[in-house]
Structures are given as structure tokens and as C-alpha cells.
Image (cartoon, rainbow, N blue to C red; front, side):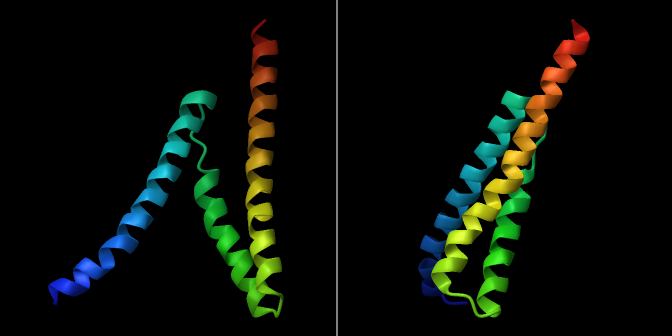
Length: 96
């Protein structure tokens, strides 16, 4: 193994570590604020990438695929947050 290949791979590895670090902070904050271990972020990142790839393979434009990927990622997160908030209001009304 060449030492230069390791040094050349360092910027990509550092960038990926920063991205995963930000995602981990999001999961941690969701757990602390909502008091629920919400791992929707993990699933939506993979699903968004799969949607983008499948759209590209079916012949759609790169721009359309890249614009629909974040929209697909927002839908499950918004459903999760709305269901969690409605569950919290239901639980607080039952405790009163």
C-alpha cells in the first residue's frame, strides 16, 4: 500500500465523517427533544439516493432527479414529526 494513496483519500474520508457527524447530531437532538429514538434520518438518506438512481436509470433528467430527492426525504420526516406530536398531545390529554 502506498502512503500517497492514503493521503489522497483523506479529504473524501474527512468530508464523509463530517456528513455522518451532522446526521448523528440530528438523531441525538431528536432523541433529546422528542424523547423518541427517531431514526427516520437514516432511512430517508438511503431511500432518497435510491429514488434518484432509479429515476436516472428510467431516463429522467439529472435535474429532475436531484430536485425530487430532497422532496422524497422530507415526506417521511414530516409524517414522523406530525405523528409524534399528535401522540404527545394525546398522552398529555390522557394524563390530565
